[in-house]
Each structure stands twice: as C-alpha cells, then as structure tokens.
Length: 210
Image (cartoon, rainbow, N blue to C red; front, side, top):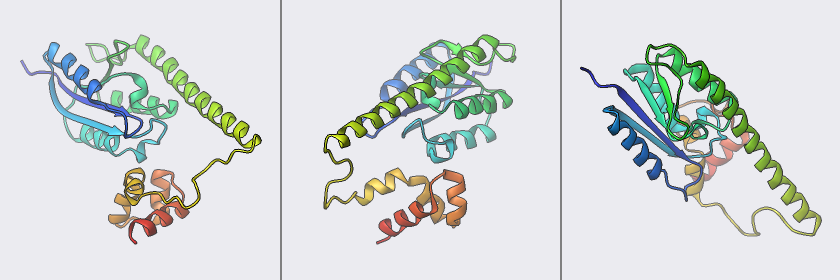
C-alpha cells in the first residue's frame, strides 16, 4: 500500500528564533502515522508578510502544484500566516488541490478521510485566523502607543546617529526583491508582486550593489 505523502512547513518570525522544535515534532507525528515526508520547507520571516514575500512558502506552493502531496503538516495555524486573508486563501488553495492541511497543536485537519472538506475544521480555523490577525493588530497598536508615549516624554525613536544597516541585513530582509531583480523583473512588477515600494527596492538595490 502506498504511503501517505506529506510536506512539512515550519516558520519563525525572527533570525534569533529556531524552528527545529517544530520540525522535530512534525517529523515525529509523520513517523507515528507511517507517513512519507517528501519535502520540508522552513523559513525565518514574519507571518505578517504577504505570501509573495516569503520564499519558502512560495517554493512550497510551486512544489505542491507539480508533485503529488496528500497532506501538509504545520505546528499551529499562525505558522502558515498571521494575515487572515492569506491563511484562508492558502487553505482554499490546498483544498482545491486535494491536499489536507493538518495543524498539530490543535489536532485539526481541513479534509476528512473520504476527501471531503471538514466543516468543523473550517469553522474553527476561520475563527483562529481572525484571532491571530487581531492579536497581530493588538501588538502593533501597543507598540505604536509605546512609541508615542516615549516621544511625548522626549524620547527619540529610530536609528542612532551614524548607524548604518549592514548590507547582509538588507539581503536577508529583501531576499525576494533581490532575487526577482536578478531574474530581470522590472521595479514596478517586483513592487506589485512583493508589496514593497519601488523607491525602497531601488534604494536596496543601490546599497547592495555598491
């Protein structure tokens, strides 16, 4: 009997964090159920970024569109995306491909064994996606409030005088934009794909190519 083919996806938000725990637990789950892990994707990038800005997620989508995959395993739903619209769109894309998404932390799966959509998972994940988006907005609001209070008390927000961001940091933060530049995409098209302004892309390219 052919084994169930699964793909593992793990994500953390910053370079100082580690996704090895996610990978370990997801591999263990796959092994316990006799699944065949055909590919793993992992990345260090904010879940608030658009899908087009996330290289590993883009590669995962390319892979699932050209290879047979039965399930995608993730640790918890915010790992897929903290943007509710992107999360639900990804789930819909996988479902249309006949791929079930399994969320380890919640024990939820988007499709039933008979291949039909799991209505309970659809309801719960929709709520969780909205909750994650609200949490993201709340964190952003608190940070903005903190900055405003700091400024009101004479504080200065921003880079220290004389500070220059390392070139490697630009390469990491704008990896997708630089990759598309190398492939010959125009600044305008790259801006549409990634959501980054043309001015920023031009500035980053100039810094990196000094």
